[in-house]
Length: 267
View (cartoon, rainbow, N blue to C red):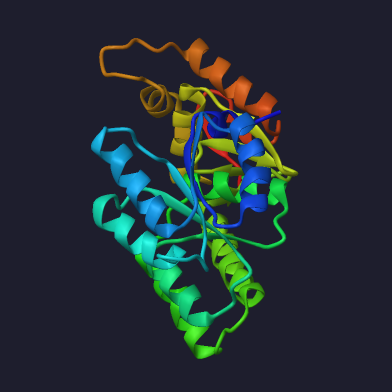
């Protein structure tokens, strides 16, 4: 089943090898909203600018590096002059550290080495579209590559994965009974499973987290789940939201202090 995010993407695919191009174009046509194909970097840039002129946004550019007329890195540099938000995924067997450093500085966050694993490529495309590496993270990766004289794509992947895991761990707060909360996506997590929350559950849980291990009165919590100041939220409504949070996570997550309020219990 195709991820709903991928179904909405417009992808520019730049590849000079005809066999590889035909194989992936067949997959892309069944996966994305629209796939535009170019045979080299120069043609890729021209097609990008043509669509840009028509106000037709391209979400992802999937490109080889080593191509005639204009290589992938130089094409990306030109594209970035016109659109800083477009995302890139490199498909390459190229391991020159100079190219890797150039691509990182340009904000390229995903590589797939040839021969291409199609499922891995689709995962990298989804990742590239969702993620945006900040300047601090880029600088850390660049400095580590220079410090350790990185020369292989595999070594680059190791550094990128470590930085990504570090970033993800900062986004997750561990609760109790194996559950954690992801602030970025506003979901509960357990054993790689995602548990969705409704708006009032998110508001209440984040208020609890900000005031963890404190006893919070009913009045405070009622105010925390009020969408606006004019809304009259009842104690029964509060109890319903807490009951729902407990059902989705752990019965031990929120402690009830009868007649006083509630308390979030963290590990």
